[in-house]
Image (cartoon, rainbow, N blue to C red; front, side, top):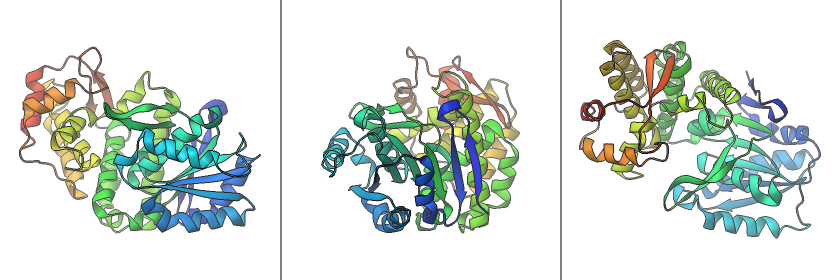
Length: 363
C-alpha cells in the first residue's frame, strides 16, 4: 500500500515514503542514508509521548545509537530560546557529535521547522530526516526544505533552506490528530488541487467521509498525490524565485484573517480556506474566472467540514495587516489567483476595493 514520491533536486534529491506502519521502518530508512554516527530525534512533548518510543525502538533495532530531545509543544515554543536549549542538549551528548550525526524531526510543523533549523546550523549543517505526524506537515512542510523559528517581528523570520535526506510519513499517526487539525491540513490539500490538479478536488469530495474517518488507504493516496504536487513545484523552483509562489494561493488574505482573529482564534488551514474563497472572488472581479470556480471550491471545503464564512471580520483592518505581510513587496500585495481550476498566476495589480469586497463577502 505504501507509495514513494521522488523530490528531484539533483544532488539534493530525496524520497518521500507514504503509507501505514512506516514508523517501524524509520531505522531502515536512516541506515540507507549511510555513514551515520549519532542519531538525534527532536520532537515536542505531545508527539514524543505518542510516537517517540516507536521511532526510537525502530532506530535502535537497526543498530543505531539514538538520543531523543524534547521541547514543550506549541507554536509559542518555536523560538530562538527553545533552539538555544536544544543546541545545549545536542552539544552535551557524549561522545560529542560530529558531521556524521543524523537529526530526525518527529512531529508536526513546529518540530519539523525546529529540528530542520538545528540540522541546518549545527556544525554548519548535518543531515536530517523528517517524520511528520500531522496532515498539514505531511502535505506541506515535509517537502521543500524550509526550516526556521519565529521572532517577535513575525513567524518564520529566522531560518534556512536545508533539504532533508528523506521523509517518512506514517498515515496511522493521523488517527491521533484532533479532527480540527485534520481539517486544517485538508485546506492545503484543496489548495494543491486548485493550483495544479483539478481532479484532486473530485477525490477529496468523493472520499470526504473516509478521509475524516482516517481510512489508511484513502489517506495514503491523498497524501501521496499532494506530496507529488508539492514536489513538482519545489523541484522547479527550490528557492522560491518563481512558481513556488503559487503555493501561497489562499495565504495572502488567509494570513490577514489569521492575524486579525489572533493566532489561536482559528486554525491556519481554516484561514487559508477563507483566503482561497476570497481569492476566487477577486479573480471573478478581474474577469479571470466565473462564479462556478468559487462555488466548486467552496463546496469542496464544506464537504470536509471547513467553515466558508466567518463573523466579525473588519475588511479594512485585514487589508491593513495584509500590506505588512512579509510576502508583500515594496508595499505591494501580491495575489495568487485562479485562471481556471488547476491553474493559477500571480498578480500585483488588484485594486483595494476588490480585496475589501472579497473579504466582506466572507461574513
